[in-house]
Amino acid sequence: MKGENMRSSSKWFGIFLVALLILAESGFCADVGKIGVVDFQKLFEQSEAGKKVKDQITAEGKKREDELKEKGTEIEELKKRLEREALVMSKEMREEKERDFRIKVNDIKMLQKKYENELANMQKRMMGGIQSDVITIIEEIGNTGKYLMIVEKRAVLYSPSTIDITDEVVKKYNVFYAQKNK
Image 1: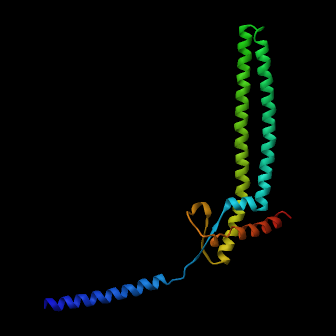
Image 2 (image 1 turned 180 degrees about the horizontal axis):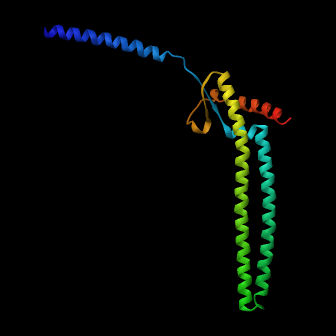
Image 3 (image 1 turned 60 degrees about the horizontal axis):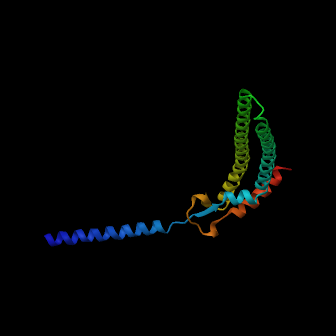
C-alpha cells in the first residue's frame, strides 16, 4: 500500500511538472516588445531648436559676462584709487571708502549669482518647451512603431546601438520645429 501511494504521488507529481513546463514555455514564447532608447543630450545638440536655444543662452550669457567684466574693471579702478588715496585720508574716511568698496564687491557677487540663476531658469524654460514637443513625437513613434517602451539613455546601463532611435526623433522634431515656426 505504501508503494502504491508513492507511485500514485510520483505520477501526479510528473503530470504537475509536465503541465508546469507547458505553461511556462507558452509564457516564454510570447511576443517580445520593441524597446527604444533616446539620448536627450544628443537630441538637444543636433536638433535645430536645441542649437537655437544654445545660441540664445550663449549670447545672453556673453552679454551678462561683459556687463560683469565692466563692473569688475570699475571695482579694480576703485581699489587702485583707494590704495593711492589711503595715505592722505583720515582714518574715518578710509574706513568708509573701504566699506563702500566691500559693498560694491558684494553687489557684483550677488549680481553674478542673479545672472547665473536667470540663465539657468531661461535654459530650463526653453529646454522644457523642447522636451514637451519631443515627448509628443516620441509617443507618436512609440505608437506607430509598436514599441513596448522608449527610455532615456541616461537611465540605461547598457543598450545596443541598434535600439537607439535618437536620430529618427531628431529628424521628426526638426520637421515639426520648422512647421511650427513658419
